[in-house]
Image (cartoon, rainbow, N blue to C red; front, side, top):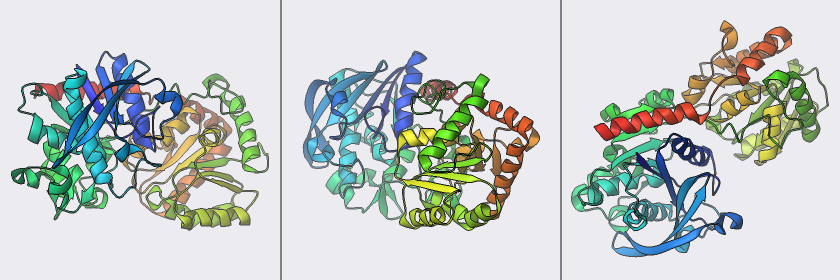
Length: 475
């Protein structure tokens, strides 16, 4: 079986979030299971020179973008046994950032078409073209409307994965003629609520639509989660499936991680985490105390991460509880300012570093005792799985992938602490239960070991994808 994985970002070349992690890990896991998976992504100017120097130039072609044709250079790279094709066009991709530009619709329309145009040139005909999020959503549309009856392309199946339904690629209808170039008879494929909607087009045209957790697949049928796409998803529910993401257990490994004070395994976790806690307190400027639980938070500081809940109870928690809180992240100014004010008010209890510092995030995973993720919505979430890997017990709201990966330890078998309602004091109740458990040392030691023994490697997820691919090919 051969798979083309189409993505706007992938490690090690470029990543801005969870998609880059997934696109860097899943193809490798598929390859280890004898699936011929290759990746295609844009050749961003900000890719590190050391990675660019190892690429080879294949050739160049021209790619149609509505009524015009644009240059498309094809570079090839190999990483961990996986072949990557990088699509070069400096007009579109020589930018300081990969998203957020006035012409993103045109940039990723070009890329979506280029992913199909390069296939005969590189002599790779996949059984499955697997696309991800709105930036690649037009690839299934273009395949269905322009390529599916071409003898060379015939028989290819398309899969589209929704990583975050909030971002759909919604633009004015003028894009149909000016950028996308669909025939008038096919305009309805991408039209939704009077606009062009890239993601809606992929839902219409793909053979299978997946999300990054089973719970999220159910949630996006609800208007509260769907950001307006519930109608079309309900109509196409028969092709919808959720597969939980995994994490890279080689990259996230407390036994080998060079970013933490000491390396440790499940056999010496108590001693190892004690040293990592001391290092975290030192780095964050908190009093170095062994006898205080630390709650960690590594997050974008935006509303859907549940920060309104934290705002609602943090003062009460810090005023009445012997606890420390360590935060790394950046985002909306209101949350940044709030946490700075709390740090000034409780300098011995709360510390925040604005920005994303990967090495410091690792120190939180290793040095904290608890990890807070009270998300309003969370398609999958990787941080809770990483926290478990380092023996840091998650506190999460039961939504999306958090619900599918974390179960409450109140039954003596779970791996964390959960709450259901999006309510600040329900969250506070879960936090207080976790702190009570922390002070029950025998119980806590058992819970930490149970957390570290959870398996969220890509192996299980990759097997589920392979099973899905085989079903799609048979249909």
